[in-house]
Amino acid sequence: MASVTSLSDSVQQHLADALASALPEADGVDPLLRRSDRADFQANGILALAKKAKANPRELATQVVSRVTTGDELIKDVEVSGPGFLNITIADKAITENLAARYADETGRLGVPQTENPGTTVVDYAQPNVAKEMHVGHLRSAVIGDSVVQLLEFTGENVVRRHHIGDWGTQFGMLIQYLDEHPHELDHEAGEVSGEEAMSNLDRLYKAARKKFDSDEEFKTRARRRVVDLQAGDPHTLAMWQKFVDESKIYFFSVFEKLDMEIRDPDIVGESGYNDMLAETCRLLEESGVAVRSEGALCVFFDDIKGPDGNPVPLIVQKSDGGYGYAATDLSAIRDRVFNLKANSLVYVVDARQSLHFKMVFETARRAGWLNDDVKAFQLAFGTVLGKDGKPFKTREGETVRLVDLLDEAIDRASAVVREKAQDLSEEEIAERGAQVGIGAVKYADLSTSANRDYKFDLDQMVSLNGDTSVYLQYAYARIRSILRKAGEVRPAARPELELHAAERALGLHLDTFAEIVDEAAAEYAPHKLAAYLYQLASLYTTFYDKCPVLKAESPEQVENRLFLCDLTARTLHRGMALLGIRTPERL
Ligand code: ARG
Image 1: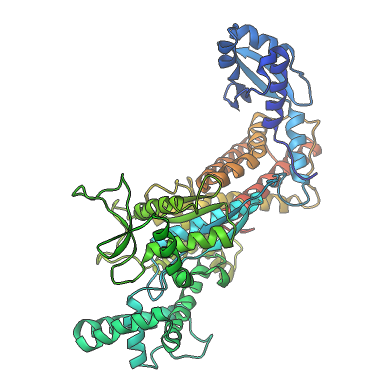
Image 2 (image 1 turned 90 degrees about the horizontal axis):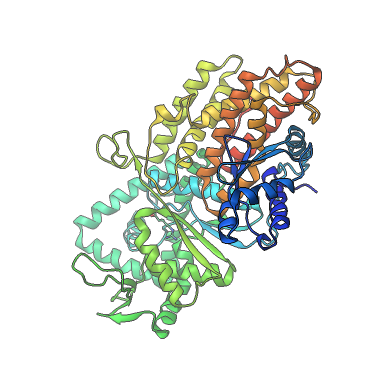
């Protein structure tokens, strides 16, 4: 039995039983337990219940109290307060024993249960565009998406990752035609080109192609014809296109590696991957009447979506020239994910500025019967990354900031912080830690605010040792690891017979709620809730550490028990940070 029932769940159950025995109609009623400053927990559920049963709430509360078992095992003390609340204090022994069970979980899951009936969720994230530079928007999708994937997998959900890269569209006609006329521009032996070179090759080619496209009418015509060839599947054209995709992937992988993120090739299913489904998708929509022809285009209309002129704005599934766009691809991807991958949930980690698109796409899929109450789609929309000035993040020249430059700068800053504090680290170690701290800082800043909000990209704040930053959490972890090393032969061990200091209790009760937070963060696709939990954990640990000497505690048993609290905190920090995609170095 690896999974551990949390103290709050046990108390909840015990109170529910006491309630039902005091008032039979209260069977199954939630006693509404929450953490409280006055005691460990407060239950507020009796008020509403008494009102419904036309009983006096204080009297009912008193009856419930008389049915609660108190002692060492779980509830040490319960009393009625205010109009009929219950204040509950947990026994020290129960706290230590519960934590000991988490500590003993040989699966390393800290007693967090796995869901019994997992569903299948497709997470659409980290979706840059072929032959284009990655920018901060792609950072957010990658970082948030990766954490959501980790969280869901940890709860036991089946997760399918999909990187819906932009690898299809009219600009490829121009690029392919240019490459065909200048055949050696992307030539190199496989494996010998770096991500940065790959990007600069693409960039150079893109600019040159664009220049020719804008100045040479005949080239323009040839380029337009190439789009048609591409969509028709002409083998030579497809081979050229593949070169762009391959070159771009070299670049993407190098950025993802810098981000310390595992992206697997088979999970990259870009827009082109749905090409064979597009005609069928349109046919199904037209035959079912979900989409209608309007001025030659195949459109879906919505009552509540109108343009500034008051006219309805349709979702265009097929243009009047027969071409398919972004919407047709996304609708086809839904069919693939629902019918082939058998998903029950589709999560799209995409910029909030695409919300209207997804609203229309999801509604269309619902009308077509591809989505319904059992198969749901959700856009995990994220806000804009702002500069220090509060305006969308741009370079001084007004250009979008290249993601790689930004990551390099974060790593540089973090390395400086690590170097300053380093005592016994080699240059190599400083570089490695610098990368872990710098990338962690960027990820944490993104994950610690709720996704839908904009946030300011402020490196000074991100690598600060004080405050709600990953560096603060990483230092807390490294500090604990150093204490455990210093303890030498003395091993951490739970000592349930010991009385706990208030700071130990606060830390212990918080450690015990890890499972609930992970569950909540996964169910709501809200990594920021886990980040807030971890920050509070590190703060509670700091208070504990200030108030309670560990290696110099009063008795050998107390040393062991405090080492045990330290170690469980470290493990929880490590696990939690990993769920955010952030490393916790052993030494800093
Ligand atoms: N490639 C797109 C962009 O850079 C994001 C793709 C989002 N996913 C999707 N299924 N439409 O904006």
